[in-house]
Image 1 (cartoon, rainbow, N blue to C red):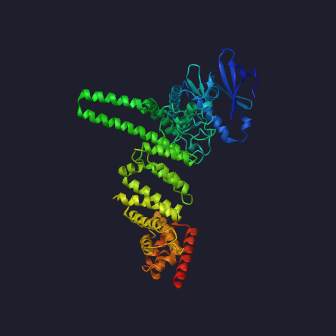
Image 2: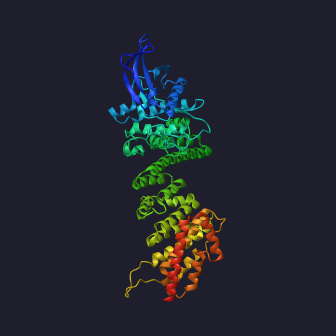
Length: 573
């Protein structure tokens, strides 16, 4: 370590230590002849040992800084090798880092944060414009110095790298957990400009809310949930910066700068004023064409605003730890953009999980679609705007209830979802799926109307219309698949085969008591799903290709049990 009073290179007198990071110690020094303060970063070579990655990071930091020139970056004065140390002599930036500023004074005002956002975005744009681009990767309050005149400087380039088109993915996370973009964790692709945009979004979130992503609740939520006085515009911009998928963030600093310059367009008051201005202009101009085009422009601008804010809420929902918080953000996203298919796909992925979907998930899902008083249900809007997407969503939710929730209640609950598919009568929705939806609906209706009724005077359950139940199972069993069918058809075939086997195993006695149902009819259904008929053999080939051995063994065991129960019921009839 350098010592207070020590003279470096015969010029720089060490005054005191001012900082310490993972790859070095920073001292305040003074140039004795010029009287100018300097920062001296000492990196002990021996401390790196055989860590070649650490050595390369140090060399990279030096080379990157030597070739940069920007008012928001420290100037490299000199680089010296002294014994077993590398000394980097830099411009000394006077001021306070933003982490200390937050600790002392709490969250910063929105106007000041927006000013800092512009400066940070501009310096990142400069770094990204280098040949090759420089990706900083460690933007956070402690690496940002705010000078007395309000200008900022970013320091510590130990995590920076140069971006190479077609380069390999990053192999190690260099950055700070909580601030670092998801792709900075090795194996998720090469970091690029959008990684810095993510770090910037998290930094702005910390500055304006005072909530560190390194502390509970460990995730980014809408800033107006912490402070309702903050603007919708800043909330939307931060939300878009911090989307997990890089493709959905701002793709460049130029895009982000444009968004920052148009923050006011998010505000309700501004939009009302703009409408008034436009209206006066249109009246004065008396131009029908101008009126028409102006109206389209405003509607488009408002739609874009709604979409971006909905995107932010969707991002928060997907990253939420608890279902209650996720549901709240999903509902906000749907209210803003009810026709956006991506929200519905996200809902499916979160709640409709094989082996995990339960009554609690079902209740949360229903709550999300519960309409607010006096407003059109979002699902109705979705059906109007995208009938095929609506049918696909309802069909998959129905499948979730029918198979994943399962049991009597699951099958009952599936009915309304399949009924929505049938009612929609979409010409673009696959006819095969619509046919299956009708069959599933009939089975669901059977469960709703007959299974679980109160006992009659004899103490037995009143079970009527097993003939109709058989017809529903028979229709379901007409599903066709062969070795050329896709994996999705194999999944459907497996679920259908298993369902039929389970129902015959469970209700063999009751089915045979109905005069419309004969033993040979039920045996034929089991022969189909067991691969003993031509149709069944082809369907079995499809399942063998796409389903696991364990699943197929389970199916064969259920079929065997169903055949046993059917024969026993027939013999004791």
